Length: 130
Image 1 (cartoon, one colour):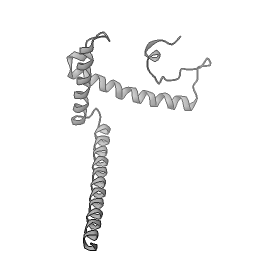
Image 2 (cartoon, rainbow, N blue to C red):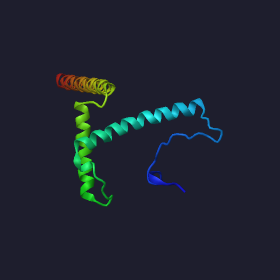
Image 3 (cartoon, one colour):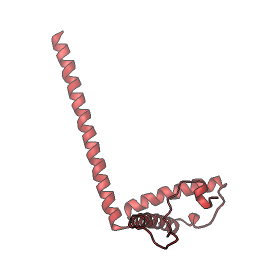
Image 4 (tube, rainbow, N blue to C red):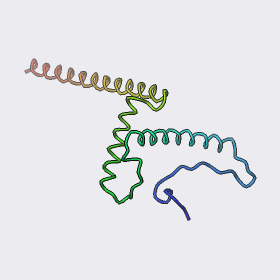
């Protein structure tokens, strides 16, 4: 029988040592990556609890108002992390992400302008041909 949140959601769980007390190198590497992801999650929830008192208290899952408040607090925490990253590498990642979005936006604008230019040229050719 599965216990805990795993029965409700998909979960990624670190491997435990086998009966002989060892893990393979691949299992240790996988556990390390899972731990790194967990640290980021814990940092996020820690920031959320520091910022918003409403998220510090335990609540019942049936409380619909608390769901809305929790969602709102999560959104505000995400915004706060944009302004004040959890770690330096988060700030670097975010700056790279903004550059990527800007490049994609400029590429879309360039394509749209090219499409409009071709359309105008085709319209002018048709008018001249009439």
